[in-house]
Amino acid sequence: MLSFELTVICSARPGFIRSIGNVLKGKSRQLECCSISEAVQMIQMHDPDLIVVDLRNAGRMQCDQIWALLWNAQHCRCIAVVHTAEVVPSAVPPELSSRVQVVEQEALDSDLTNVAQVVADSIAGKKDSTISDAINADRVLQAGVFNSVADLTKHGDSNTHNVTETADLTYPTSDSGGSIADRYRTKTDNLRHMLERLQVAAQHDVTILLTGETGSGKTYLARLIHAVSSRESRPFVTVACGALPGELIESELFGHVRGAFTSAHADKDGRFMAAGRGTILLDEIDVLTPEQQVKLLRVIETGQFEAVGSNRTLQVEARIIAASNLELQPLVEQGRFRPDLYYRLNTLTFRIPPLRKRLPDIELLARHFVHSHALRHGIGSLEISQDFLSSLLSYPWPGNVREMENAIRSAVIYSKNGVLTAGSLPPDIVEGTSGPANDPSVARFFRGTPEATLENRIELTEKDIIEQALLENSFIRTSTARQLGISRVTLYNKMKKYGMMQGKRPLSTG
Image 1: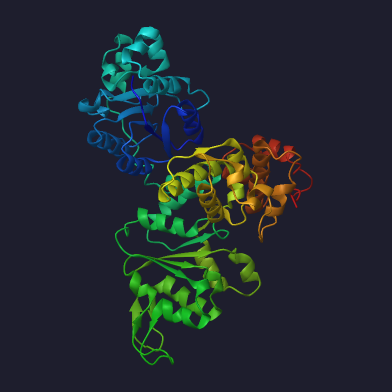
Image 2: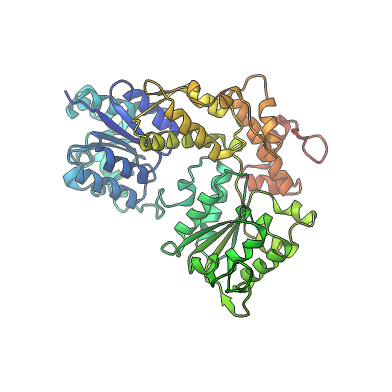
């Protein structure tokens, strides 16, 4: 009987990972990951016995990565999950066909019976022939289970047409490990739509403004913009404007010449020069003084500046990404931010929603952080309990992704018996004692409904999204529905459901 000591499960769908993990519980140690690039690292580091990989909508590069890894890991078997008629005989090298088992699965993961059965059979050490003996050929085709890639060519004439149709299959050009939306690990529709727009902007040499609460991932997103741009091989330089004394910001950005001020004992290049033809991130630009904002506006518009104490004009070649924890429009109204710089930046502004408004992402991010920190601290694989996930979903995360990662790092360190429970988390997370926040939606998060169920939390988030879209579209329902990707009737019904129909403006949730 075969015995799989270690199995890697790879899918961007948390439900898939959870379902397959339940099949493997008590039968095999398991490592979970959300992308092919992570699976590559896990396979190289841990040399697993089995990999269950979700290749639905996978690009050719992703598939080639898996085949290359299997070629080097001679004893590893692979269960590849694909869409119906998505795999062709030439998709897997013939040398690997005996170790690759293909399972067809539709897009929705509501019924993973077929996949679970194949995984269970593999763990139990059943021979490939067991499947075909247990059910007839028609049911094999209907279930979409193939013992190996070679079997795709062994079915009757009824399946020949499908094989021929997909022989010239064109794979998606974007690798899920390479697109900004997939690397950012989000299943939140409005955020994915924003990131898809950002992907387009990232590939052009334009200045981009990122806004979002502290810890929401602006720096990480800026690195992704740099990674998908033509400047990827050039330097990526970060300037934390809020961490610098006001009188030194200009010197840090533009450099200075000897004698420009008391402590300027030698010439120094600024961060713009250090970035070269790469990318420079100016974080917390809201702290810049009006005079510094004027110089930044000139750099953005003309690419020119002078070092402090110098009359020599230099040319900036770096791409500029600006970031702010605060919305800039209120600062303009308060006279703290220049309108001309605001309007120059506002044309390509991308707002990152807080984690409490990205509930579909919490489990996805949590599993990623659990396994990355378990690996980093040498703890090995950990089982994630339902009450652990429930605690994460029931907390508003005023510190956003950064706060959640720190909480999970702590939970991993204090985990017991290989299981993460609610008790592994810091007490304030479990008790719902959230830290300080400027956004009133943190307090509203706890108010909600009598029962803090996931469904209720999602509804609260949906209401916030609709309110924000209405505000952005001056309460014009046609434009709002178009932005949200729903019909006017659906928008009307949701507004009615959430009590947002009184007067022209929606009711406040405060």
